[in-house]
Image (cartoon, rainbow, N blue to C red; front, top):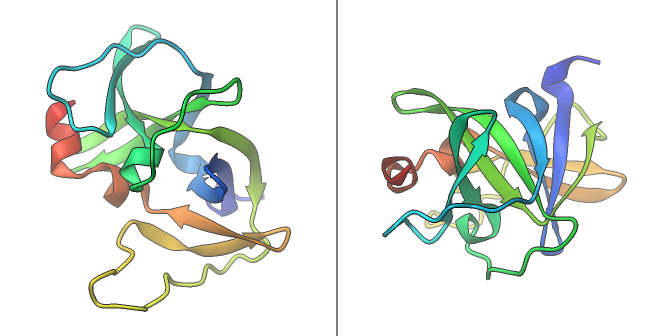
Length: 152
């Protein structure tokens, strides 16, 4: 099964999201995050991953959801994304990680065009897994906001 069709499915609140497996370096249990002064609210701080400092972004806050306490299922997904100045390694805190899987179809539906004010720029498409909608995130666009990377 080709990598480009595989996704890591993530849970945030009651929603299911997916990240292309090609962007995922590893999945970590929750750990202590060192805060950064005056960082944007979705930038939680830094963690050490084998000697490399990695900024951690809260997916809940990035998506405009209310923060929630960590649980035994909270994970940090370490990603390699394309930033404005080249490759960037980031951690993405999610409520839980479900599985590495393929979606029910190779084709993603486009984000709904409900309003010109909402363009869904951080959504690569909408897929389905076992009859449930899965929002496939465009991680480069979602996580490369200038405010996030300039604080990291």
